[in-house]
Length: 368
Length: 137
Image 1 (cartoon, chains in turn purple, cyan):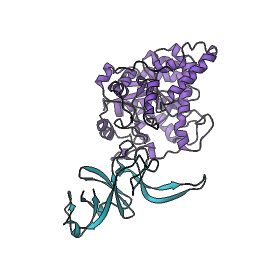
Image 2 (spheres, chains in turn orange, yellow):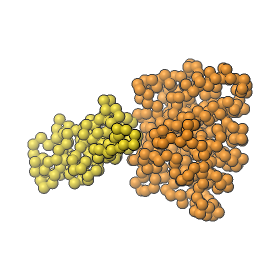
Image 3 (cartoon, rainbow over the protein chains, first blue to last red):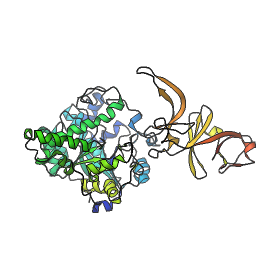
Image 4 (cartoon, one colour):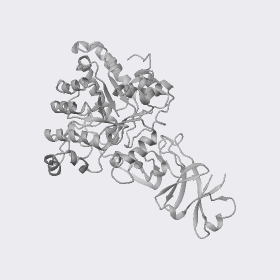
């Protein structure tokens, strides 16, 4: 990877927005909140059988978290319900509190891509999209939605993407990086084709249940191990997209990697480039050095902010990867939330700041 | 410098906290087993309100499989990222030299003694029959 020679200038879109948050987690006060969007057949199914994903304990995470609901202690709404379930409180504490112009919802509950019952998965994806519109997008114009689609059933995913794409309040397609196979595999290609056709970017937010151990070395014992093992998953997905030739087939495809960190990106690019120089003939369809695709088709969100010691080392990382690749995110209301005022412990130029906090995301989502 | 009356002792239950404003500063007041402590409210890591943090003990271990909990309720755990601050010194457990909050001397005094002298009761109607928490700044 070469050094970025020209940092992205503050785009025109960026001048309209000061702060775009690419990762806000909405949730339901209770599972019944989805009922109006599910037919009786699927409400009955949920009540009788519930979700069924590729791990034990279907309604929980693979490793217990350090705080209830994975959330900030101060984010529980005073009127009850879990963090992220109360729009008035989300407005007050988060959107108004931080002056957020645009906030992108990343709903993780339900896990439509991970459901093993194919028809329940389809019903759940549709319900989660209707629920986003009804509960958040209609009443709050600052919020944008993510299209939930069934990754493991690409044909059905495309039907749902086609249904939602006209509603431009949905700004991206949300997929989990921990899938049965990495996203570049040919069987997922219809989803990527639909994304390009509708000019919708894809967001890969950490998580997902593909049935594989959390790390390539097997199951870790502790949350503290699993927490950053997401980096391995993100790298596997990126390598898959690049080496399967996805960006040659779809040069306009945009993909963001959300909550997986970014300090590893330059070294990953260097390593892929080195391998490409000697093994290029295995994948001759990959016509450019891999790090170039990192520069043209892939974005990263900032949270959880990297905190190197000393802090100024971050400046090198930003220089190597290019600040035009970074989009600010808070992860509200989750515990590892970043505050836009304090997250960066190094000074940024006004141009870098305008790009990271709004302009890059405005370009990514096509908000300009 | 001054001694400020910030709360009646019965306003902050054991294990609980209260945000008080003293001389323009936000201060987190804690009741640890009946003893009061005060530290600056803003977490130096990313700015969360420490008064909303939980009072926790210290988990320590000399070897894998051996655990002990000590200093019950004497550390405040930041409500966001979980940084632990020693309620007595304001120092964080993981980075005590650099990541620390200011701590303030706290005492309890009877209303009869605080209505006169160097005390400043900015918000309170002080009664001589009650006990008050006094923070020194």
